[in-house]
Length: 283
Ligand code: AMP
Image 1 (cartoon, helix red, strand yellow):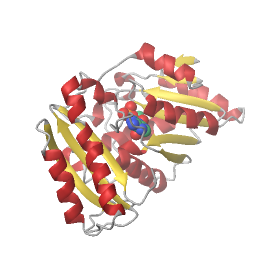
Image 2 (cartoon, rainbow, N blue to C red):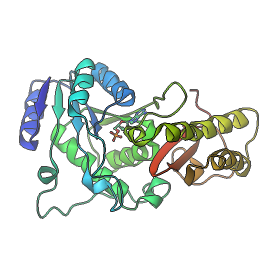
Image 3 (spheres, rainbow, N blue to C red):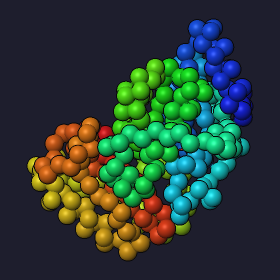
């Protein structure tokens, strides 16, 4: 496994791999890897001759009062997981390299970036789209893998790739959960033991809504009420949003169907967690 820290070296490596006719699979992350990231890497291993993992805590996707400075990091642990998953190249650029003085270009995927996380984190998806476009230009992947844990992010990036004719195939991977249902996330490391227990209300609300939907409750108002009740019973939990939207356009829906996205963001203490499900989809 090779560690590359500069943009120039990564771009040169990608160019010579392309010249050799090698395909590149790419998994962009912010590090502090867990089994969710590993699932993307394992799938990437199957889909490309060369597997590239990037680790970059992207400052421009964090708001002013967010957790950029304390975002968890563990380079050594990340390299162990990367190695186990068969990564060929770990690319770890730094912020001044990615955003040198004078940097002023931004990619904005207009409508898909507005609701849900975009409403509570203004500018977040511009930061995501911009960094992923840059990483695509540096790593030159044939296929890139993303988790559906960040459902809206994947929708935004798919739109960007289509709109800008980017020559890369985007693959969405299922949400990996802990045994008790909590969606894996680097931010789970912030939770105290009591908060870790409270955090089960996100997956609990999803389970409840999926059960109601499976037994014929289709009115979004009814589904939403049940989910909110379950979460509001948890004193440490504060709902940021809990919404039902079309799984493709992200437009609001009043009646649930098989492509309905239930998406939620909940603060557990000071930690903001997200989760989602597509109602008609088998788990
Ligand atoms: P992050 O390091 O949080 O930016 O995540 C990097 C990639 O891993 C993104 O495509 C995420 O959607 C994906 N990911 C994070 N958590 C999970 C999870 N629990 N299951 C599947 N994919 C995940």
